[in-house]
Each structure stands twice: as structure tokens, then as C-alpha cells.
Image (cartoon, rainbow, N blue to C red; front, top):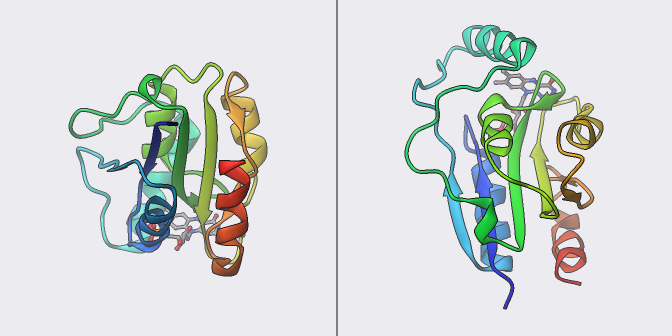
Length: 152
Ligand SMILES: Cc1cc2nc3c(=O)[nH]c(=O)nc-3n(C[C@H](O)[C@H](O)[C@H](O)COP(=O)(O)O)c2cc1C
């Protein structure tokens, strides 16, 4: 049986909610990525820090022992859209893993900017992974179809 991991970062809970639904459908393990230094609640402050981290591209410190992608056949990865791209905790996690030949199924929650340039950024950052279609986590009625596509 395929081993499945759902792994996500969520600052305000939207991506967490979608991650839990996906895990309930796919089965397997679920893991919440947490930065060592929590992001501030103030939206202006979190945007300032998030933007600086995205521009630098440097890894940020993450809490705990991260699940190894190596042990899984399918990895569903959830991120909020931050400044039109993947949030730094998720980029940091993915960059720390060996993704060669791994099936990576990214899902995104967002504000008005939809997926931003997340699909293109993933292709550039992780060309060694097998990237499934990115799921727009704001569109609940498409979830079943996306999950079925992953299981096929
Ligand atoms: C630092 C930061 C940057 C964001 N940038 C964008 C953006 O560029 N486009 C967009 O549509 N939403 C943006 N958002 C909104 C989040 O993507 C949206 O609220 C998301 O659902 C939050 O998910 P979460 O509750 O799992 O943290 C941003 C939010 C934060 C905190």
C-alpha cells in the first residue's frame, strides 16, 4: 500500500483545515510544520518578515523532527499563498528533503491572489519531484476530484 504524508504550514488555520480534510480522505500521516520563532499575529509585521524571508530565500529554523519524504510515496503539501509564492516554512521543509522522483501534491489557500505564481515556482525549485496539479484549497467543491486524481 502506498505510504502517504500530508504536511503543511498554517498561520491562521485555513490551510490546516484543508490539510485535515485531505488527510481524512487520503489516509496516512499528517504533520504540521512549525517555525521555531512564531510569526507575529499583526498582519503588517508578518508580511514584513515573510517578505524578507522570501526575498532572501534562506532556510528558517523549524521545530521538531521533520518527517522524511524518503519514507513516502505521495506527499501532499499545504501552504498559504504568501506574497504570491510558497510560505517560507514550507519552502524550507521541501528544500531539506530528497524529492527525487517523489510525487508532490501541493495545495494552497489564499486571499484575492489565487495561486499566485506558486505552480511555476514549484517547477523551478523542485524539478526533480513529480509535481501533481496544484489544488486551490479555497475551492472546496473541487477537493474530491483532486484527491481522486492523486489516487489514480
Ligand atoms: C505574509 C502573508 C502574505 C500573504 N500574501 C498573499 C498573497 O500574495 N496573495 C493572496 O491571495 N493571499 C495572501 N495572503 C493571505 C493568505 O494566503 C490567506 O489568508 C491564507 O488562506 C492563510 O492561510 P492560513 O490560515 O493557513 O495561514 C498572505 C498572508 C500573509 C500572512
